[in-house]
Image (tube, rainbow, N blue to C red):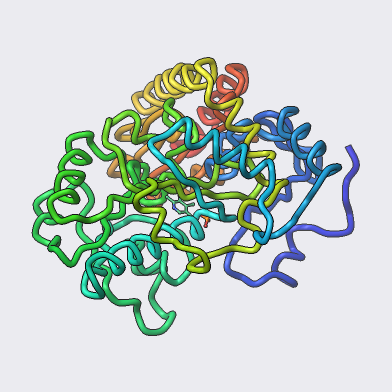
Length: 404
Ligand SMILES: *Cc1c(COP(=O)(O)O)cnc(C)c1O
């Protein structure tokens, strides 16, 4: 293992805008669910690039798709279409409720497209007054100005000038509040079937059914942000498939590219037609490299082996976490679905999720937080059972140190 002496973590503070606070090591190589840093230290990766590395690091199928496409065609712009984009769109349409696909590069951009499309759809059919977007408190939809405004965490939108209008927030899982907020001026209701950043909180199927009914009553579009919950994460290709509640627009990103930047907005033909020629666009959206990789990720993920494997791995991790919860009293509960899991800090350990993240890293284990009170895991969907066992062992040691 070569040590790269040229740059290191301290250079971040010297040359990078200080909007992130990265951990004190720099990873240089990954394989499967293991990572190695500049010093050659090895880590079990249960963070998964925040629910991005669906097939772990450097999966051979992804490497093959990328290198093959890299030797063929990189970029043509949207004045032309391309084969990888058409193939990927075809697969997404075949696998979901959607008839049409729009590609972009990030979750925020897919949501930006979704919100703009909902507004345009309403404007074209019902006029300017039907523009209200209702979203949930504590939700996360990205960091562009529109998406932080729709997102339900004021700390992300404060201090960036005049707020965007026509956006309201209601508590998550509160049907009465949504009913009270909705009117015929509502053009869309936006929610995450599982709030990810907000603390790994799944919505109940009953809530989703009632939201769907309210949207139908008021002629509003239902938008599911599945940027974090989608692409096999729950053991279904998308979380909506578990509930049986079908949205009008769905956004996907993160795991879609397995680590290559790409996002997609999926919708019905009737809604899609309101994005007529010239109404929206993206230079890189539908880029051949990105679509070639995502196409291969979808081929691997959307199989019974991988999706059933997610449910099996869920069981392994949840039972290990519950055992530790009993042993150490650090966690009050474990929640989430599939391989998007949150261990909730018990009362006397509130605010200490970060401490666990730091101790775990010292033990050679990468985990995430979802707010100060939840330790979040979002590993590869095909993580080896041996890596789960080793990861849980290292977490056990970290917790022992925490309570000591
Ligand atoms: C991560 C995330 C986003 C934003 O995705 P970016 O690629 O960072 O723009 C949007 N919505 C949800 C639910 C997310 O988890």
